[in-house]
Amino acid sequence: MSEEEHKLMQRIRYRHVEKIYTDLKELGYHDNDSLNVTDLIRLDQWHYLGTEPVDAAIELLGIREGARVLDVGAGIGGPSRYLAHKIKCHVTASELLPDNHRVGQDLTSRCGMTGSVKHVCGDIIMTELGNQEFDHVMSIQSILYVEDKPRLFRKLYDSLKPGGTVFFEVFCRLKDVENADEQAALDFFLLCTNTLPTHQDYRQLLEDAGFKVTVHDISTSYREYTYGRWANWDEHRDKYVRLYEEDMVDGWLKLTVTTKKLCNEFGLMGGGRFVAYKV
Image (cartoon, rainbow, N blue to C red):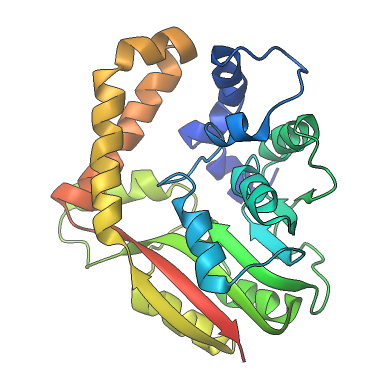
């Protein structure tokens, strides 16, 4: 396991990837049961704002039936399956962490979607993507954790067909760090990377790779989401302890408190949606 993988594995979600099976049991599913994809979609969107970012990608990129889409940092495959199910397109779900990849493959198979969602595991920088293979690239809250972003964006540019498009949503820094409390919170949140780029930083990186770029600041949505998620986990802690055990719940609460501070009290972190066109 690489140092990057090891650090990312410390994030509370990735230490408890089997949580999805507990959630499925709450819906009445048993081990190895076939899954209704519409049930799974309620549980497997492990990012902010549920299916909204994927719907935004569909609209902003104009994704159509039969398109070939690369999902970078696919996790357990929630956005990939939702996209393939809704649009009837072909999605390659690329994920760094083997446990996420394994669970994603299992869920996709149990949904009967192996014909439309292909899972690949490995560092996206090292993964063979081919030349002009994809119509679109999508990534939700994952680009942050790729250290060599200039190389990533050049690689994505090369992997796209002429006129191809990129959509990604990511955490962005809104101001300079002002004190030790802000720095400590940011360090805890970042874990495996040392920097949090601004909206303008990402724009410049994409333009340097050859893209034409549109930036959407969604920091208000991130402020509302982080506050609401913290309130939910705090209010329903006893229920979640029953389902997931105390270690996981306390880890989630620490993360939700930190992101709430970064996005609300400190105003240090927000969100961005980036649409890039290969020109």
